[in-house]
Length: 550
Ligand SMILES: O=P(O)(O)OC[C@H]1O[C@](O)(CO)[C@@H](O)[C@@H]1O
Image (tube, rainbow, N blue to C red; front, side, top):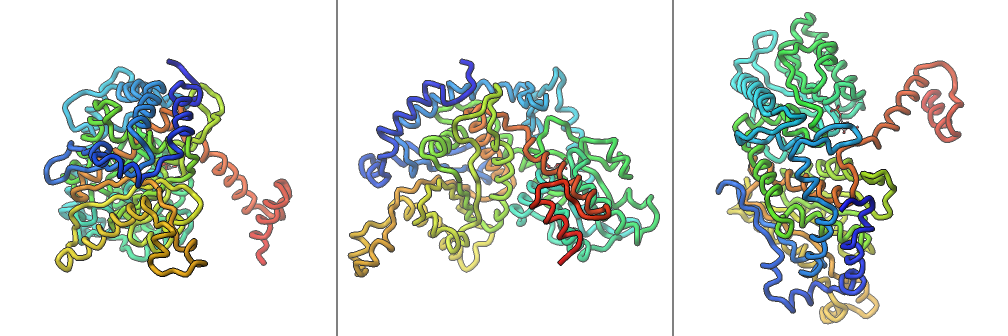
C-alpha cells in the first residue's frame, strides 16, 4: 500500500481507538496481577552473539501495552511497509532519496563472504581493503614499529572530527576502555572553541602524537580549522612539511580535499557516500577505536553489529526486538503524546552512550516532511536524553518519578562488571538500583502506603508516586566489543523502524545547514570594520556587542 501520512493508515486509526478504549486506561500493576506470564510473553532474548558476549535480554513487559497493542503496532509497521524499506536498504537502493544515495553501513560490518551491491557493484572488496589498511596501520602504531619524525613511537592519538566523526569514536573508546591499550593516550577534539584543541595539545608532544583528521566531507568548518591549527602546532616544532606524513592521517570520502590539506593519500582511509556520518563508526572513522582496542577487537565490534543486522533482517516483525522497541516508542510518542525518551545506562564506561544516541536518533528522525513531500500531522523524532545510573537518580529522576510528563525510558546494564571490586558489591548495588528504579516507576506509591509509613496528612500528596511509568530493561551479559556493536546496531534499527513508520527520510540532515551558512556570514562581518545593521535588531545588537566589547 502506498501512503504519505502514517496517520491515514487503517492500523493507525485502529491504534487511536485502542488508545482511547484500552491504552490510556492500562495500569501496569493490574496487568502483572492479571497475567502471571506477562514477563515471559513480553520479553525477548537476542541470541546472535558468541557465548562470551551474549545473549542480550530485552524486557518490554513494563510497558503500557497488551498483546492486542503489540498486534496493532505490528500491523502498523506492515501497512507502513517497514519490511519493504528494510529490504530496499539491504538491496543497496537509494533510499536516502533526497541525497540520491544508498544507506549501506551494514556492508561495513558484513563479515560474511556474501557480496553486497550498490549500483550493481559489489562494495565488499573495497570495504575489505580499507579494513586491511586499518589493520596494518593500527598494528604498526600499537607495536611501535611506526615511528614519528624523530624515531620515537606514537603515544598520543588526537582524533579531530565532529558529529558522527567524533561521537561514535568517543563513545566506543570510552565504553570499551577495559580493552584499550593502557599506555595510549586518546584525545578527541570536536568543538571549534579553541579550548578543546588547546587542552588536548597541552598534553601532547609533537614527536609522539598522531592526528586523525576525521571528516566524511573534509569541508566541515570546525574540523578543517582545528586540523589546520593542529598542523601549525606540529610544524612549529617539526619544521619540515615532509614530517606531516608520519603524524597525520585522514579518514574521509574526499581525496581531493585530503591531498589539498597536505595529507599523503597513503595515509588516507576511505569510505563511501553510502555511509552516513552518524553511521560511520563502523567505517574508517572508527580508526581511533581500532588503534585503541586493537584490530581484532574492532572486528569483534563489527561482528556484533553484523549479528544484529542479520537478526533484524530475517526476524518476523512480531518477534523482531528492534522493531518492537521502535513500535512501543511510537505508541508513546504518537498516541500518549510523550515527547522524550530517556536512556539510562547503568555502566559508567557507557557514559557517552546517550550523547551518541542523540545524534543517531534526533539527526535521523528530526524531520517533519514525509517521503511524499507532505507535512506530517503527528509527532516524529523523540527528544532522546540520558545519563548513567546511578548518578542520574540523584539529579533528574525526581522529575521522571513525580513530574507531570510521561517519560518512557530504557534502562541498560551488564550482568558482569569489568570491575567487580569488593567482591562485586558495587555491581550488586548498581543492579539493585537498576531493578528498583523500574519497579518504583511502575508501582509508584499510593497515598495509603505513604500514610501507613506515618506521614502527616498534608504531606501525603507530596510523598505519593502515581507510578504506572513505563520502561524497557535491557540486560547484556557483559559489555564487550561484540555486545556493544550489537547494542548500537539495535538502536540503529529502532531509529530506522521509527522513521519508516513515520514515512520520513531518516538519512539526510538538511536541518543543520542553515545555521552553518549564517555563521559564515557573521564571521565575515566580525572580520570587517564597523557595526552591522543588516540583521534583525537582536542579532545586530549581539554581534555589535561582541565587536566592541562591554
Ligand atoms: O564528517 P563530516 O563531513 O565532517 O561531518 C560531521 C557531521 O556534520 C553533520 O553533517 C552535521 O553538521 C553530521 O551529520 C556529521 O556527522
